[in-house]
Amino acid sequence: MNDNFDNKLILLGNKIKLLRNEKNITQQFLSSYCDVDIRTIQRIESGKQNPTYKLLLSISNCLNISISDLLNF
Image (cartoon, rainbow, N blue to C red; front, side, top):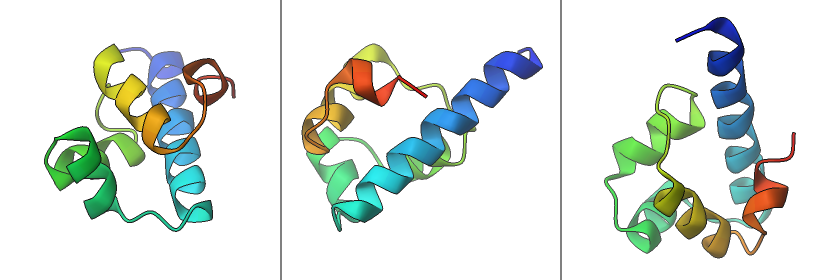
């Protein structure tokens, strides 16, 4: 992957983590809500995993934010 793409994944992960913390949602709760392993959430938040569109929809629903706002950074 190129550096720009990697940087976008890091920005996305940081935003998810920030919003999750602002709403006092644990990684465990988010992973259960999204029906994924907690390690998946950890990898996404650290910018090491590219989430699927379906998973992004689930994350945005849990965080009560539109997917377009989630991806706007």
